[in-house]
Amino acid sequence: MEKEGASNEQAREEGENSIVWNEKYRKFETRDREAYIEYQLIGGGKVMELVHTYVPPSKRGLGLAAHLCVAAFSHAEAQSLSVIPTCSYVSDTFLSRNPSWNSVVHKSKI
Ligand code: COA
Image (cartoon, rainbow, N blue to C red; front, side, top):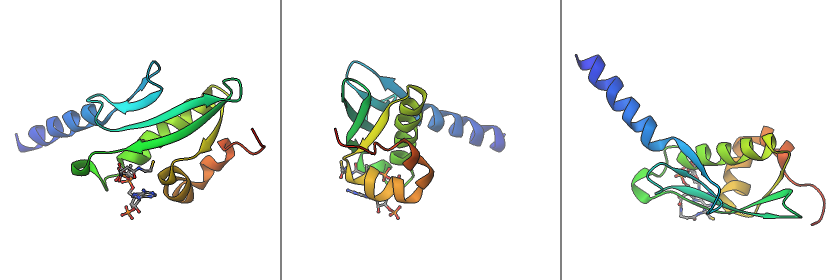
């Protein structure tokens, strides 16, 4: 019983924290929309500038911002977009901890 309760709890948390693409508002966000990474498309739509990441204080320090970044970088890679990491969380924390994603970072001038 206890095990089942724990896995239900886990399933609920995974559901709450699963990331969805909100194309209209140019965000990747949790289903409750409380946490998000926001972007703009520049360079004729081929470059995704990640402008802001937000996680509510009660959910910080759990890697949620990193999940948001992975969703954004995976989307960019799949769509052959390059990424400009304007948000300091992305440039200073996410990319230094996950350097393999530097392959998707935009290299030349816009
Ligand atoms: N810039 C860069 N790195 C930051 C940061 C910032 N403004 N704020 C926190 N971090 C780093 C911390 O060093 C932390 O490291 P630790 O785990 O060793 O303590 C790390 O982010 C936590 O990573 P993660 O758990 O993936 O992030 P999170 O889910 O706690 O969310 C923010 C991180 C920055 C999105 C969240 O703190 C937030 O919404 N802050 C307010 C808005 C903001 O400053 N956004 C970033 C600039 S656009």
